[in-house]
Length: 216
Image (tube, rainbow, N blue to C red; front, side, top):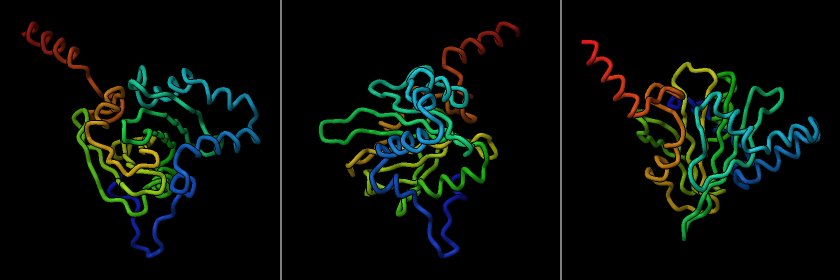
């Protein structure tokens, strides 16, 4: 799905989200809170800032029981009237590396998802793929993005609704976001092998094999 998005053939170039690429995803959460607080009130913000509720809400579309070690849910809720849910997580940092930040976008319509992808993808990013849980995930990566090394990944299969994508950033650092870091992060989520929610644990697969053998 991601292969067909973000085209610049029209000559106008991609439209970028100035929040993401000007100050990084850390500011995004604050701006969302301020903007929605003025419109929806304190109740929405309290709900969005409740880590347990936010994780449960994300899990309805992307199965996850707990976040990876060292990661904290900062904010998660539906953005009113936009067909969009945003979940922002703060992660660990190494000795010489900036803090990791991840934002999941759950979008109710493909056209809206295309718009979010175009606004969020790095302006000078290169195509990058990684194999996780039996799937090859594709996206765009830019080590020199304004807010730090950034990787936008598509998690959904073609035609899946809602569309789920994740933007991972190493804040204020161009240090590479490695495949190993990504695999450790995604190990807590069910994203394969046939799309979000289709992961079968190795123990379960063994049990299924035993049952088939016994029946024979």
